[in-house]
Image 1 (cartoon, rainbow, N blue to C red):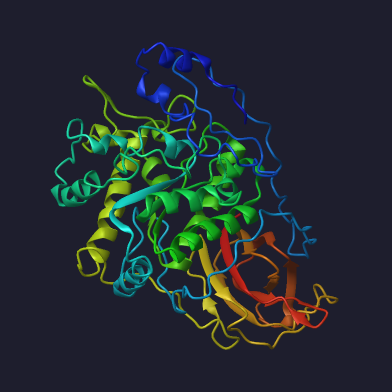
Image 2 (spheres, rainbow, N blue to C red):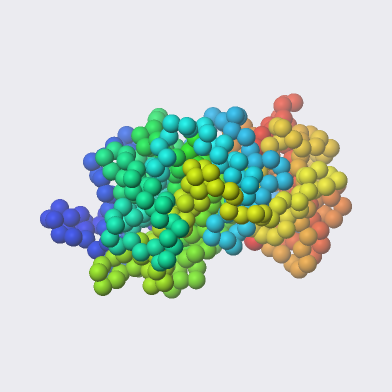
Length: 498
């Protein structure tokens, strides 16, 4: 939803009057900077929702609900979805390897994704790509929840910081206090890749893009990345996934370790909030596919009163003590609030990365859940539970056995395919989505218990929404062939509760 600019906080600031911290959070903190004046606005991303209201101002009315993708009443075929014009594709980075097949699965109910021995190797390999990057600098990439002065800035001061007994974090806290970029430290730096109202595509728009400008200027070793709150307005989860993959890949290509985050609840709009777990499953899938850290802010906020959100039911709130706002109070009292939780999770993630990449420490996690199966017809990948995500590349793997499916007999699917098996014991509503980039065209097929092409009961280019009866089902992710050319490439499969 669009919210009119808040003139009162700007007038107060111009007069030198202090602003309440939450009221000032989403006023652009460097209106004269070159953060994005020369950028064209992202196309078709929906109305930004990223304008926080000052205290005591009534919430703006919710944006009209955007109709959800209708559930398919039966498991009949779903019509193809027309192609949507996307932000121009970013060239792939072929020399950045994917995590090997059979990777670690990122659990959806943990605050930090696992860092096992093989993922330590992965993170060190990313860092090795940027040997001259600043070891004591990180960048911030995101929307107003990242722009807010309640996010990380308070760590720059020696006052107002209470680690709540977590003294093991102090070396990392001090490491970034000592960092210098653009005349300040990374905690307080005004990022060129974080702006109020942005969706993920905005960070990639223009030449050079805001993301490129930020990474060039700051030369960070790591970057926090969180988009999604505004992207949900358009309900185009496929564009969102492609953009988040591009952001992540561009950071990795420069030797920057991206630390991804799930997004908070959308308590301002019930329909938008239904989409939050779907978008967060995409975030999980992107992080897992690249073997980079994920922090679950959404999961941390859910148990809190008001989900740790401010009066607009959209942005996190901040602990107000007798001494004022204290976003870096990581105490039991402080951790009843949204920004305090985000600051703790982010500092912990930066610490986990620094320990294994800068200090040579061993993996903090001995093991983690792993993907079972090989994706072949004889040994499909096993979907253990929902949400589930997995990325594969049909240009470099997969079988070529299924060519056509009766549920869409005219489509030539003679390219490579990967298979996934899912067993349910009760009627289970699901939403299965496949995200691709560029010319890649990998289609989604739902097969019955026979797991054959003849057993195809539903097919779509991008999304299947249905209720599975008890039994064993198979998803075939198969490559479309156009005029004799296989449209092979990387896909991200995401399956969530319907």
